[in-house]
Amino acid sequence: MASVVATSILRVVAHGTDLRTAAGMLGAVAFLAVWLTFAVRLYLVGIYRNERGLLLRYVHRSRLLPWSQVTGFDVRTARFLGSATVRNAAWVLTRDGAWETPVQQRSRLVGWRKNTGPVLSAADFDLMMARLREAHAAVQAGGGVVVR
Image (tube, rainbow, N blue to C red; front, side):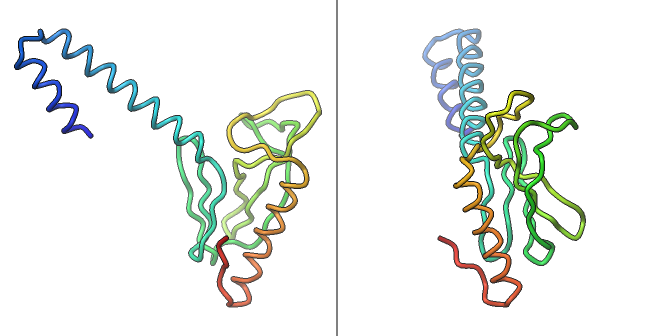
């Protein structure tokens, strides 16, 4: 990607465009690249599972938790800047502690909300938790995980 941008700017400069215009084009392309990366990451936020473990994907980072470290799942209050919010979130319990996932359960209560990540209806949230627990039980039994 960077080489394509650099080649394009060199062509523009070679054809007589001044350096200020080329730098402006570079700035615009860089802004679009950062914005598109953020938009894609925002779209992909969630919990992903496979035979190796769970991938907790947030906007700015991802965390891979191997099945050998996962001890269970829980529904707890979502946290925002260290304080409780009005929504519940799925938490992954591991040998090293509990990790809040970005997936939350919809709430009609008024108060602090964290708006990064999927917000599921109660039925969908319960179904997701059941599927995570089934996957964990299958791994514990030695049968592996069926990824759908």
